[in-house]
Length: 109
Image (cartoon, rainbow, N blue to C red; front, side, top):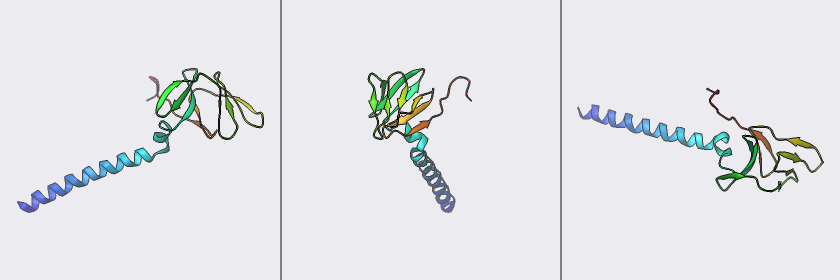
């Protein structure tokens, strides 16, 4: 009986450790980290800024570390003069790196 209880307790502890490890791995996932780092993004047709964990509308043009300038209308101009228009779901970190994020909506399963 003591052996059975010990095995049961060990099994439960192992499952808790596995769940904690899974949660830690998810937090290290770049997709999870994107939402926490400062960036600008096009969301619902509007430019938004994530700063210190808070999302707010982009109220003024911003310059990124690599010299790229992003305007409130979603236009981004690199230091070399190349112009692009950010599309829904695109984001740029404060270094000027463009990324695409997945946006779930009612149609996405």
